[in-house]
Image (tube, rainbow, N blue to C red; front, side, top):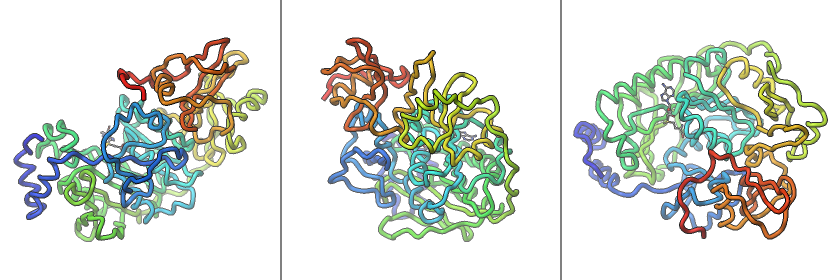
Length: 456
Ligand code: SAM
């Protein structure tokens, strides 16, 4: 590992005292590898794997495989996530009522680690909005959300200042803030190179701006969760104080002592810090707050989706066959011809979202009609709402990887029409049998670009 910046060294020596040498030694080790399972796509065998103590779906792997070449990863059976940040699962379990439908905003969401974790935790009738301000980071967020396959997730692309029409709308707002990244130094040497006291101060001020735009979005009694992957007080402590002084009461968590997570007390508020020499994970900081200040009452009813048309009955009958619970959706055509399934339980909330924000995507992407032919969407193949008994072909690992290379497969048995490519029972995407050929409908942006030398 490169030399630590001297000012960072001094900061950590002051913060850790006698433990500093253990901290420094941990930074010279390989980071642990951990994954989090998709509770609605059970296929990964976890026999013999050690569980992440604070997240029921989190597991450590003994070494780092090439995830890109695992069809189960491509199918959304698991997400590769650094273990410390899964502490969010325990925080939500202790502070949110996960049995009732919640409106949740993940404000700084790309690439989607916290979003997919939140989606797994929330009740099915909850609304999860994940937002990423940087446009070029939205595609990776979208890909991860589509792979995870939960139809209750909305993706938006806005600055935190642009959510004003959703004041008081959310039961939980997660701010996983852009930070100086001290906690990722052993994984990300760029973060270490870019580190400076000036940059820490800039990050802290940016976080303050993001938080100040967030305060009014939380409903009275709702939660605001602030997290960073850094250790310094300028970012973490100062922003904790800011929240405590602006209408939020800090919520302590009860964490078992043998998890080795450090409690940092700031004027009566507490934040939880993971250090890499104390836990099997990277540096991570999190604190939970409850809104005590007034939030505006519920807004009047919004109008149904402007410019969208209810899907015609004949077409609706056709697409309903693709879903395990067709009555759970209403069916719409967007002006660009895309068909969308809207979870009925979320319809009124989504009217508001549609009116409030311009850059967004929501609902289950069903596909499009070309004449009378229905072309199912890739997102539909990966959705947990897909009917389980649709025609499909179980592929070998080699065939699955060739599918992800976007090759046209030669199958043992002829197939006709739309069929699912499946691997260990999980849908990977669509194929269409035409005569003797099977066309591969994987979207080209999803193609595996790396050269595959070994298919087994
Ligand atoms: N929550 C993500 C996860 O778990 O995978 C990681 C989020 S990362 C720590 C912070 C995110 O904030 C980045 O995606 C970054 O693009 C975004 N960001 C950067 N500047 C921002 C700003 N001014 N307002 C809101 N988000 C910002």
